[in-house]
Length: 210
Ligand SMILES: CC(C)(COP(=O)(O)OP(=O)(O)OC[C@H]1O[C@@H](n2cnc3c(N)ncnc32)[C@H](O)[C@@H]1OP(=O)(O)O)[C@@H](O)C(=O)NCCC(=O)NCCS
Image (tube, rainbow, N blue to C red; front, side, top):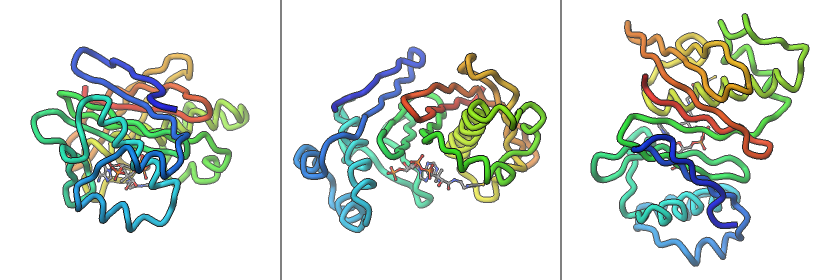
């Protein structure tokens, strides 16, 4: 499938989602990469990862960019030539990117039962509003919380940030599709607005600095 969805988040932020249905060969025939990227691609072991990586480059083409415009810093954080910020995510069947004048982060997570087993690794104060007995809602809310923390981490990107100890996602209802969060780190508290929605069996989350 080509482009799955485009979301105009605000007048200077665009989000694009690709559903990864093409074969590796099909995608490879449509994407040109710079030598550095090609080397990284050639070293990837998983075909799923390679297809996701190429799907991100297909999304770049949708906004008239190419792999030659996309770079990575030493931590793996992507950036573009010019003033726009970019954030990238890929899950099993979706790849997505968000591009904005603001600092932004994005994450797509598959909704999985097993997130319950690792909840205490990334959830702390949020337990106050979670109801574990409502299993389906609990899994979906945990996935939003996880995605929010990944998205915020991708914005701030500093060593030492703990999802459990430093990022707090405020109470929300799944129907609201929006919440707020605070990163307490390095003697500062930074508030974020967090948007979330479901795409098939995945949760899409993106965050902005408030
Ligand atoms: C780097 C990290 C944010 C990637 O997230 P992920 O859910 O594993 O994978 P996603 O598919 O959502 O995102 C991958 C993309 O994130 C981007 N990325 C990688 N490192 C990044 C960083 N340091 N900052 C911002 N973005 C980063 C890249 O664009 C990457 O895709 P690409 O290399 O193909 O372009 C994540 O692995 C991580 O290190 N998180 C923080 C560590 C942590 O505290 N984890 C768990 C605590 S319980």
